[in-house]
Length: 127
Image 1 (cartoon, one colour):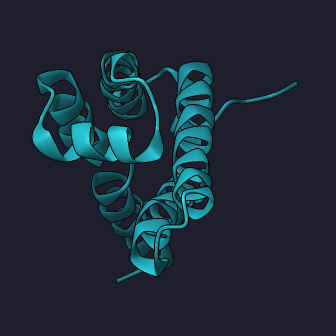
Image 2 (tube, helix red, strand yellow):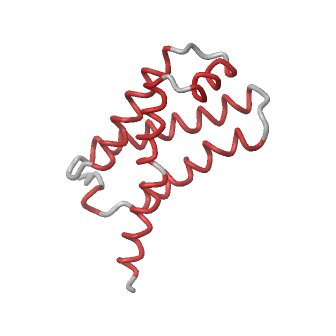
Image 3 (cartoon, rainbow, N blue to C red):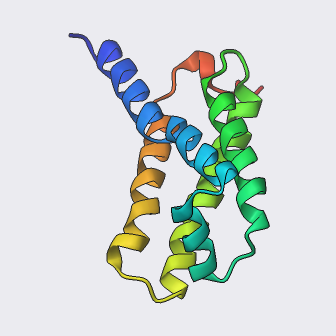
């Protein structure tokens, strides 16, 4: 298998495990599922953020998967970066253990890999 094929496979694997997984998270946030509600309470964050973040997670996942929307993808990837790095920082500042801090960082690594591996048709062409 050639390098281009491996890159395409790696892109879709990291995209499904990273950015596209925001569909699950966004749905759980919007449903007010027990786990995200408890996490927000634990971190001292207002529960209304579940609705705001849930909508943005879903819209971001859609943006990354839509064809021919490179500028929108840039914004979505930036949002994922801020969300996941902020989640890791919030857990660290709350005194949570390694697992709680590492979980968003693993998804951040997948998201960064997806961003770096995306094909030219999904990149913003400057100039």
